[in-house]
Image (tube, rainbow, N blue to C red; front, side, top):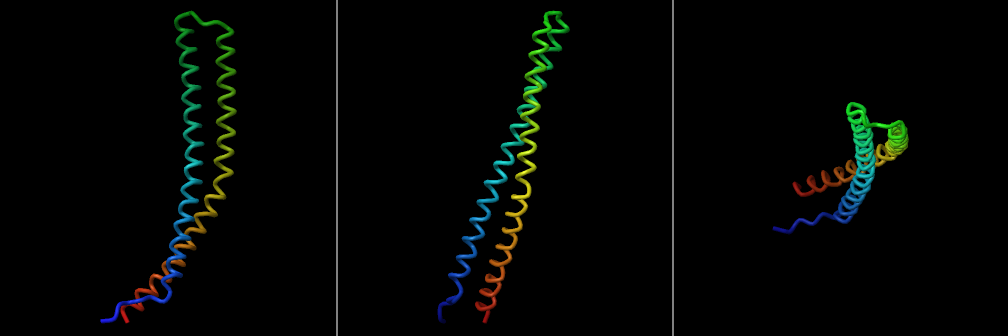
Length: 123
């Protein structure tokens, strides 16, 4: 029996590599977005720690006005960093959606050629 040779194999290979490249691009974008989200959570934890330390000092009676003011400044600056990070995450979302659509299209194109290959193999 003759060995099966698909004439459009190079096209299939190109479409597979294109799909892999788009997957890598999407993974990179999602990783950046996740880094921003993790950073936001770290800032939230820091703010909580500031206020916990301040409330402990208030209960112990060892806090000063300067410490409270400093705590407020730190919390304010961290909150600004969280807000900036949220904006960056929101700005990334349209790009991520665009790359997802591109990936879906590349996947459809690859599947069309794979189905054609299956049909030719069955003949």
